[in-house]
Image (tube, rainbow, N blue to C red; front, side, top):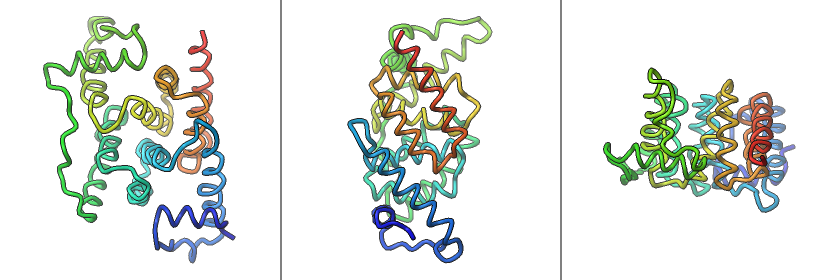
Amino acid sequence: MITEFAKNYNEKMFPDYISEFLETDPEFIERFNNFAFDEVIKQTNEGTDSLDDKTRMMVILSYLLGCQGIDEFKVMLPAALNMGVTPVEIKEIVYQAVAYLGIGRVYPFLKAVNEIYEEKGIKLPLASQSNTTMETRLGMGNQAQVDIFGDGMKEFYKSGPEETKHINVWLAANCFGDYYTRSGLDLKQREMITFCYIAAQGGCEPQLTAHALGNLKIGNSKQFLINVISAGIPFIGYPRSLNALNCVNEAVKQFSK
């Protein structure tokens, strides 16, 4: 039997919607809903570093981008809108994913967002969120790196072997200058969603540890990150979630030094 809490949470996400899985896969949907929309919600909704509904939905969308869960993304996007995530915030989550997943993996999600927005009468394009020009993106991107990771990143783009130095320039100008400097999300939210992209795609543990550290430095606590990881388990599974937890623990050690 699906719990009343899970039923009520589903109703908040999907008003008046009845899942076909209740008919075709009742045993599965009972256990999944009771876990994902009762146990996990309650566990991650306690204490000062808990996840509110809006943040939770931002986390879920980011995980689904990272694990390439396009069908579930299409299901959860309207729920995110119902839970208070704005059209601008959703677009920013999708745009920023390109820096970590590449356009080859993000393209279907961008198309899906546009299609759902059109169905819901959300006029495109949305208001501009850009705060840089081609001339200022490098300097402002580097400043975002400094704001997140500390003074050690100042002019980091000038470092490295000559043959690969351009990649450090691109990290500052493109990854941070083109995306992190935009309005719509603040830096704490941007580091949170980056953590989710990387955790969900797997195989990028050095980068995940670095961004776990970035989260800690910018004010997202260890307990907050544990809640973020816990919220993602129904959507990306245990192996990648446990890897993410190991990366957080490693980042905490570095942060404490």
